[in-house]
Length: 256
Image 1 (tube, rainbow, N blue to C red):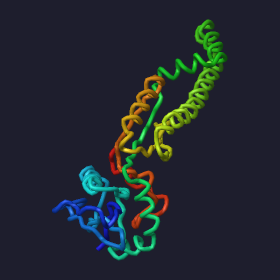
Image 2: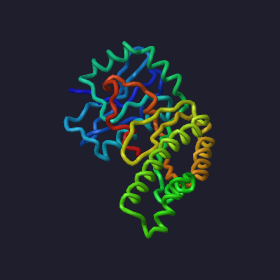
Image 3: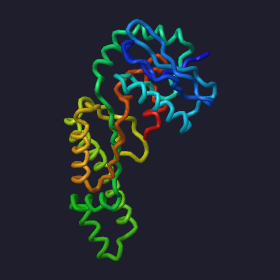
Image 4: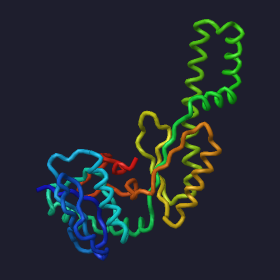
């Protein structure tokens, strides 16, 4: 039977809570697979696993419970290996790497920040910053709306200015928040988001990071800034025993 992998931790990690269950219907019992100084937190994998809310939450809950007693390297939702032996083999082969990552991520969490433009606010901002656009808009207004070609030209200029503003804002948000974090991971581009960035933050300074986010939100009223966390540091763990390089399936375990 294939093996579902939730995460990797040190063998010295405290035992899992008795009776813990994970994904599947009925939920599969969670267990550990030891390999030297490491263990993988696993269960049997359901044959028809899908990113349903119940299973997404079950995956996240296992990581939360396991991580309460120490650092766990989280695998993304849907990480399935062929069997237990395959998981143990990878843990053995990459033991040094996983131990280094456990040391590096100990006491740290991930915050994901996404942002979009507030349409009306960014249009006002673009008009205020671009004299050529203001001039053409005023000329069109005085001409009763302007010719068809002038309207098209104005629309194209505004669209180009907004697109340029997206790039500027994405870089600015990232640069303003990065000093408050230990590491930064830029997420994949997706329709609707001009910012999709994850930040690795020590738990001890999480309030400082959140305060910085709030400052950026107040100083950039034309942005709809959303933050998710604290999360396990998914974006700062390389592919694990059941994850092919470049895998993005189930990112953030549905926490967003």
